[in-house]
Image (cartoon, rainbow, N blue to C red):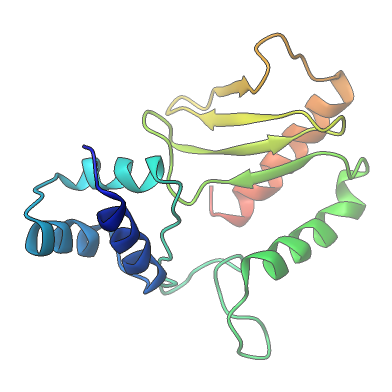
Length: 163
């Protein structure tokens, strides 16, 4: 679906106001006459590079919950806390694993990884528990130490996300 710049800006504004995918879908239909399925709307948001700010659910893990002083955790503060928590256990400090807010199609969970040499890529865990990795450079192969650090970091992240 092709959107005009005005429509793209409207979608970005709605998401900044913490609209859900269903809200965006409804507003596209009501305000612009664009009818899309929920999945098409989700893909549109992903294609535009926008983030969905979901409200924390009851029993949410530490990553999405409020900080101890009651203030909501911002993305950078929460990421810094995670890096600090992982530094002693990981040992390398050079591998960074992030989990996508919107899981890629065909994956149970997905995200990005940056290895100690600065190379990055996308990872996904399929329904059978197999890890799929797609690097920014098709010829790239991470070192054995980076692979082990990636597996440790991924395991820790998945634990925090309830997997």
